[in-house]
Length: 422
Image (cartoon, rainbow, N blue to C red; front, side, top):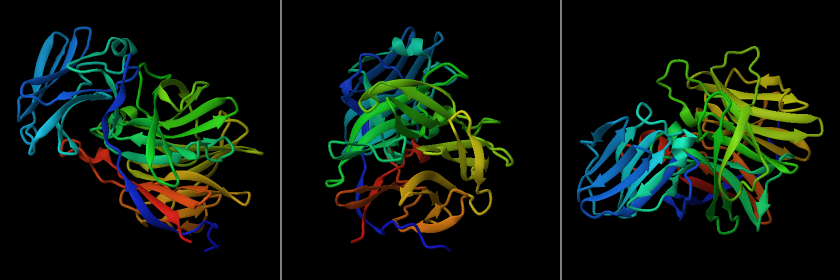
């Protein structure tokens, strides 16, 4: 093997686990189907989300939780036999809509636990913008849904690949995990203080697509500043269902001149055509972009089947004229989190290799030239690194769940922070 890229070794220093069911500021308009309403968990407490004749209810009778859905002139009731009762005292009740999923939660001590969940996709078009415009809450104020954990952390950058800083804090995008997997999550923007290592939520981003109506929580993205506009390259995980025959994931590109670093925004997108010429591909995700003096570099992940995937690199004079440069179809079976890194004028690709539990460093032809020496947790932590006045930081995550049995796999994870070794 060639000498590794000259990055330092990293040692773990801290973990962070933001969990927020409802963002502090109330909403005047939902904009996207990622909202919540909270209130005291008194016996008989009821929280409601309603739009038109549709009425979504979360109920607490003192020990048990239930959901009721009124849509299309019909009301159904939903209660979990195994998870519908709290095991500890409950002091707060929450009703959350994330994508097409409705969930009722109780706060038990310091933990929010999902006690009921139902998929509304056959009952209500929760992504419809007309339906969202009429969405209101009863029993409490309407708020944006926050997160049960963060994954897919990546630097917000300029088009040249340099990190975006504000007030001595580096900016990151993350996938805010919901009470389920792919379609309950969405993209959020955070700041990280490199000294205190505190994370602060900044904004939430949602996307429209050209091939279907509605607003989606697409994520696993890259936000970059190109001149006077923002570009957001995202993966269409927002409605992915592996149980649906022919389900796939693609990349989209959104643009905006608004301040995407604060507030709540919906971006229009177009397909980002990332080439897969010459090899089998059933889906692509994790787009990462950088503009060089010679044009654009695009890195992404392609799956030969779900879930077997590998890194790919494309180049081109513009983002609508990319051609394939390299595809690592051999030797990489679960490799994602592709991340551009430039050191001493040379572009490298950092990736996360789950079977090897390591971060290979690849050249532009996807040949391994080294390994990033940083903590590798479970799941597929991304190799996000940033230099600051005190040294270097590595920002990873793991698969630790939150929210109880009904949430399942998708609520990971805890953020893991490591500093460069002196």
